[in-house]
Length: 420
Image 1 (cartoon, helix red, strand yellow):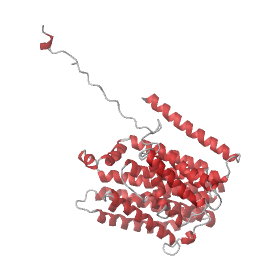
Image 2 (image 1 turned 135 degrees about the vertical axis):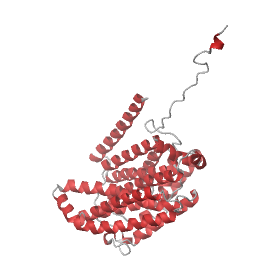
Image 3 (image 1 turned 120 degrees about the vertical axis):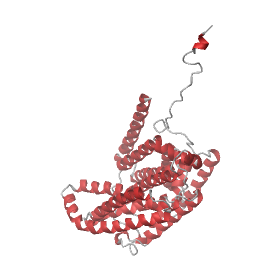
């Protein structure tokens, strides 16, 4: 079993490295121009956000349309950090975001241990306590962060410009994902008790709220550099092919290891039958929160990467119509299939934004939004479970323990049976 697992891991990592090396060579030699380089990176970003949604819906059974809202949070949070460093040469955004996420995360963990012992505490009251603590700590983070940011800026300026830019970029990507996860925890407290359809409506409402806030981010939220409905420009284009593949591999491995653990089996059991899972002693709410928060973390991570692909963000990119894209991808690839999700994400990018945009007659480019649904409809008629269905590549395939066969013959004969 160990050798077989090691072989599948070796094949997966070797294949991933080979694909990356080939693509990098093709991009470096200009065989793939900047257009196709962008399409491939967007495909990797969509794979990350869709794996997060598949974890929530495909593996945990929670119908969510809020993935695009957390995607937007990650995009704008990461872009604001790198924008302040690139344009203003200031690390204040990075320091404030770090303090806000760390202090809020610590407060959430501390309160969670305390509030679980309080009997009769309803979700809305718990949400109010969490939200109040988070707002207070975010205000404290802003006050402390602006005071110490000049020192951090000075230390970063001592490094080569390329190195400091990469440090700020990676830091912004990770911290924006943590921020999206914390927001998802706060939002999930009062709504995860809803049924699947109502949960989907609530998460769709969340995405619409985020889009409206982004439209007014310069006036309502005070982030002048985001420019509200005009769109945010000047974002450094730091998302390279390497970073997309690196984070995609990390997300795949984390998801695979989670699903193989006891936590992952509990997450899947909630999807199969909540009543039976509860009867077996599984905390339904705990594992719904786990899947929702981790899936939102992946969405924030993908959003941060997307923000640095083209160097431009606009609130219309995150409207509720676009929020259906990850849902289409996981249904197209196969619910509960990581392999199918990755394949469908790259197919979505290559077909919708690449092939159809280039090869449709001039003036008919928007017809790709007609051709693509037709392809999806045909796929659903021929393959209702998606292209991959339940299939996974050997590295991702669930390894179940062998069933021991019970020997029908007794191990030893009793003295009575041994007598003639």
